[in-house]
Length: 239
Length: 378
Image (cartoon, rainbow over all chains, first blue to last red; front, top):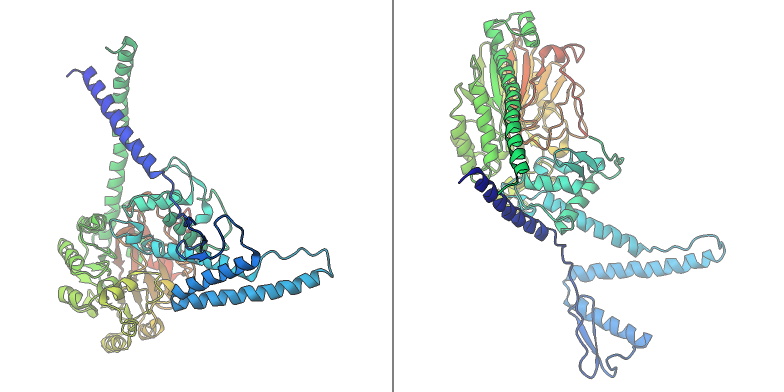
């Protein structure tokens, strides 16, 4: 073959290769599907109500599908559904649920008191958040951070293929300095975010497959790393 | 058929390519020069013994000659913290240990002996320890082994002892009394929790895993140390090898020895004491009264500096570049001077060597300061 033919051949090969790579990258970009919940249809004579767990159902006798429940009926139905759900749970869950319910009741009492005192000083803004809100925020964040902690310390959860876990170089997420992002990283040829560096570490020292930015593992890793630097001053661009 | 103007451009490209390649060769000669420099730095190891002429930049030379000549100066080298997995799982750590072995074997003249500073294996698996032993057999100089927690907590040292002998011992070399300690004993945290040997090993292998106990030399070994030191003259220089730092730096990462004060008390009556320790994977210097402390570099990965408790005399090494996986790693040599004090050289791969001299520690940082880092740790 002469030079010309070589060039033609290499151009064709290059096109083929890059289209494969492009397809792979598009595939990797597909967003993560969050769990969905399809309620059961009330196709019989009576209305069927389903709990938000997607599993616990209840038939409301005497109420046709499409009719409205009265507030009292609705309260009875929801109480019975919750009772059904609780009966299926292990002891710890039941206990936690009771505890949370107690907080709600205390909130209601406290709110009643605040409302009466608010009548005296009309300038005060009403309190929107209850103890239950605070508890939920804390619990949810802790769960996310704790999942991130597990991934950060486990080469297998991270998807490492050579036994290298994040914490092997970054005990307690030291030297991950999330507060310095975004910053320009010439090696990545762009302004890098924390997740870009996480993915760099996954692909290189740990020899794993990089995570989609919305991957639950990526989100948990970011949560853990940030939580370790709580109170640190933000310094984007610091090298 | 390619249009004529494309044919012309192709010609241009081919011409330019020639120029490019020439440029690249020029860049190559830069690396060649750097390699020669590093080789020269390695040669400084032999200065004490040979008094050969060397470039001005090696302060080491003057210090060696200025030291009172109580005994014959000599040099030993070290390799530490290789954390080997089996080669099929992680080849990089294996290559890095082999690189350190090649570094030390290239030293001319050869060091009197080589200290292996512990954590040869990552999870104390037979495949890991045996692989390490096989690679270390290639070291030309005699080797002195020390154990680390990663070698120990699977079978509590059974295989390590079988391969390398006693975990703590002493020996004399050219007028210096050397002591190797097993400083990474931990109080039993596993029996009550009914943990398997592998679970125990995995907990200990996590630097920030708070489920483990703290490192300690332990009572039995301290008694042995007291007996060993009873026969040594107070003027004899002493060099102690311990895997963990023999002082209290940062407990959450076990940069720590729980009975450090008791061990230091045993060493206090001696005029000249130096501790060389592993575990911290970084340039680390300290002085407590008569005792000088030096850390060792790892061949596997560098640790960050502890967020608290860093000794004032520590001149930090530059932050390792995460885009280069051999950054912050290396090996090094220790020159034992005529007065029994030591000059420590950290041979950081990809970087100029870093010197921490006896004079620097003796003067509490007043003179002979190591070069400062451009970017301290976060």
